[in-house]
Length: 100
View (cartoon, rainbow, N blue to C red):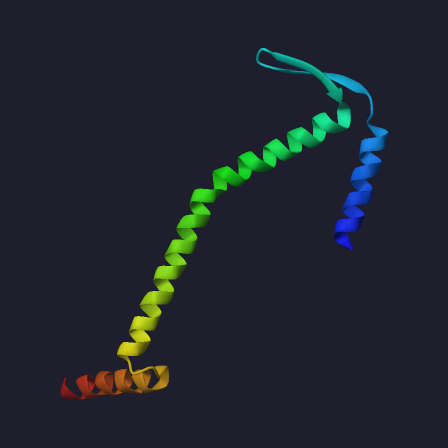
């Protein structure tokens, strides 16, 4: 449904912006429709933004994978049951207080 609405709005935008406009980039000159120039700039901005954010996304994914692996190791070391490990830790803390 949302894709249909966006397609209709994009079509209306393209129909209403059919004027020819000059586009200049450094030494490159051309003429194109206003809608094509605007949508091209939007697409280019999206691609530059996605490429800029890509390293942070990859690092976050790597960190999350490492955290899941570490959690699995800790759960396996604790016997797979977090409440039992918590009870054991509580008994260790209370017995160390009794010695003082």
